Length: 285
Image (cartoon, rainbow, N blue to C red; front, side, top):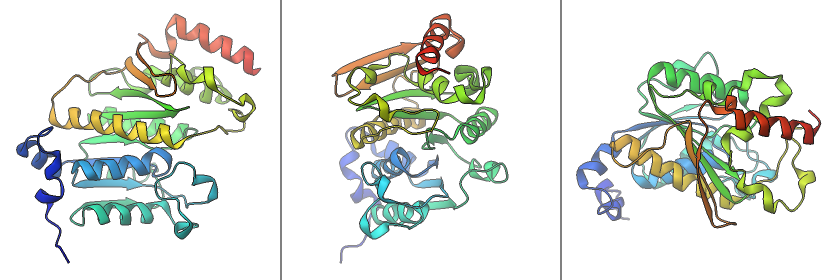
């Protein structure tokens, strides 16, 4: 049986990366909270990029409703903890990985440890996990840790980077500016100001923000992983242009469109406030 050799396993990265850059990635530590739809494929994509250290958090287990999009969801993993399954898959790609798992998910009690020594945070939390997401992004800002969110929307990906010294997650999304029931809408509108995905939604009744339900696709999750890993490469190696909030971008494969977004003030931007008000009226919020 052939033994694992890091340099050989990731040798095809060389050309787009220098050997020195690949070695730098080998020693970088990335934290991912949530290992479901986007989080699981984020992990496997970053493993194949050659990232060598991970802090990983998830408290959930796989079920049938995950089969359409989650990298670890198979018949053989039904009922198994996502954290354990995804760590096994990651180690099958790179058995030399250094991983630290957080089986209770990200909590107030473990957040400092979760982010300790981390070079980059990538968001994989459930769309509706607002409290946890706000706390993680706030901690990243306080600790000077770059943070990336790539949202799977329809058959596309909407990307925002929150960099040290720049606009924070909380200042951009302003989730606490309205009642709790408005948070899903504010988050969605902030993620995708261009709302490219809405024109081809086949069954609007499947989007129920009040009940915290919505449709999803594997295409969106895989697109998210590709763009998030690319942002990770640029941030960790310090090369390439990184659009930071309030700037972002939204690529929709179904519509073959790319929108470069810019919302100064985030959701407090006058245009965003109008769009949020119209959406609230439409949804009866």
